[in-house]
Length: 192
Image 1 (cartoon, one colour):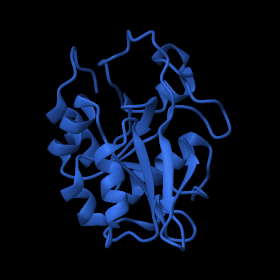
Image 2 (tube, one colour; image 1 turned 180 degrees about the vertical axis):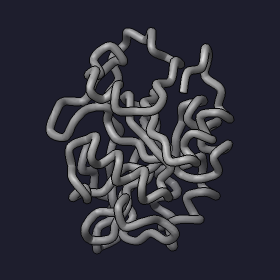
Image 3 (spheres, helix red, strand yellow; image 1 turned 90 degrees about the vertical axis):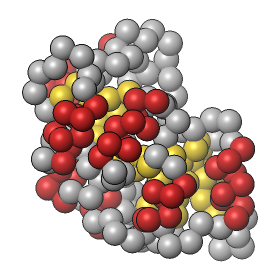
């Protein structure tokens, strides 16, 4: 697919049809697909070099609390408060998920989901009306690319579309914070 400028509706159609994209998120550049499409997720896993199943699952992006509630059976009030007031992008690991394929979940059935803050991502997710996978735009065990220019040609050549938005950004970005609610209902940060 070649577009002179990013057309959200065309990119959403590409994702619905099983395509992969390379795109900027509210953190680092990512490779993504429709998080409900098994074939896309398997293709993404092969591109990343994971094989059939990724051990820790994938991070998914949603456009807000209502979409999150469609896929997570319980959101503890502490997590809701944290999501409302945390200043940095925050990925939460939820113990259970519903309506999502096993291929996006960790081996224990948990799922990592972040409410996107980036305007492009929000519009794309709203148009698709489904979560999208957000995995760093690098092969397995390679460092994350802090800018678009650091993404390998293998990753760029392995997707169906590279988003033009923010390709010129020179300021490096970092991955999100990651937290989960432990067995005592206390918030634990895996990455702050």
